[in-house]
Length: 623
Image 1: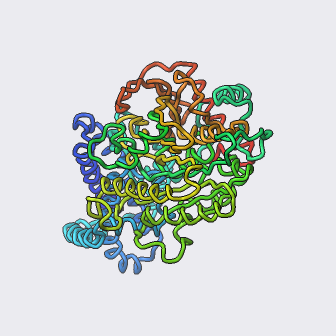
Image 2: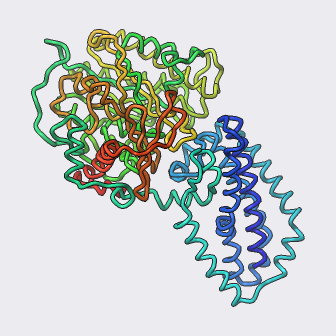
Image 3: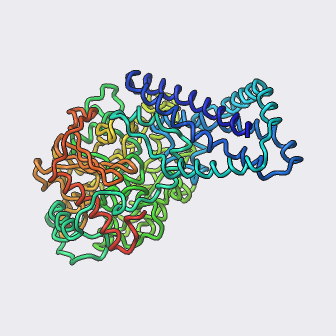
């Protein structure tokens, strides 16, 4: 049993070093004050004790279950492997923190499923060979330094009865760590809370909490009241998650006497509003998007629904508020969902989903294919089209080349088209073709942003030459921001994204300052097309929403935010509700008493979405 104790202490030491490194990253990269973070360091060290005991538990099982001959043969190589694993996971936490500023969560769990993209992404972004070599050398050094304690621990073998008693205590510890040790929330600063957590524990918690039943975990109201409020808040007499709800109204063309306009939605990977000069950036990263913003219809206060691509896809395609746990895009067997593509398809448009990466990632191909979209990803681009790609996807310019090919085919057939395009270049490892921009590849985040903007400019230049250009609505919007890090539970400034409707022959240039959500874009486009009578979405037309009634819906995986004015109500597990006053820049959040009316509206949106998915024939609230 002393061997279990030694390996537990070793795990605690690695956890402490990891936490200190993450603390330093928080101070240097995110400018967090040391005094605020020290509490997380202290609390985390205490919480590491049971987590370390569980991580070291294979050694207890090793002593209990293996024959003495096998134990003598395997102890040393397995001890070396154990040391390397601890160090490897510690480095992985640092890499994960560098991108998301949190401990392992649902994203880490998802990444284990999509190993090709994730491992390839890491290999292209970091010197993996050198890192592994350094870890092997460090593991060997630690192994050598612990040779005497290791030998002493092996020699002091406990009686079998005592071993089984320790084995029972291990089961209790596993239960505590996996089921009872909830994420720490001792501080209003989210960095401090994350530092107090343990990556191994948070990973187990994420695996267990991947599906959250809204009714079980969140504040609720009577279903009938919720649905009545949801209809009122959405501005519709009926809301539905199902495709064939309600009656269709007569089509009212956007332009008198004109044909049905084409619709092209470009959803840009990680294109935070903060990168655009339109929103104050001075680095000249997005000259093309800034020009489109000045010449088009710009929504200045629009916010992403979540922090991952699937949340953006879900919000824009189905106009659904983000439910806790998995995005709807990743649910299995979702068909006949009320989406922008399916509504347009019923009116004669040809819906497409085009992605520069592998569409099996996050079930994109499965989801959009099941809703009737024609799906195109990097596996079925036209031969010879792709000249540059990395593990995450083809260069955006090649994606847009494929878009033009497909749009030309539909136009030649006399059919209006709808294309939902998902780009990939503005993503680590930030590599792209040489000679396109003045930042050499790989260009880190600024290079990724600037190249993505270059590809948009090139796409629009080529599209202008097409006969169908003058009768096409283009929407440029981000899937989410580049970073989700912040001090508060839901850092509002990390959700602000650009949204630009560009159609110089159809839509006048204008700025719309109404507070709005990603889920409002589909109903807004339908209203612009004259199809608002076919709209049964939860989202609403931004252009017909009084500015005083603006609101946005934001989420992490478990916290659900309802932003109205400068006040955000956050629904949390265990039916907890908190309300915060948000600073003008969105970076600060001050806890204030909860307004009953705003809390009721928040519940209406999120509980209502869960109810609609249940009625759709899926156990939506449990996904």
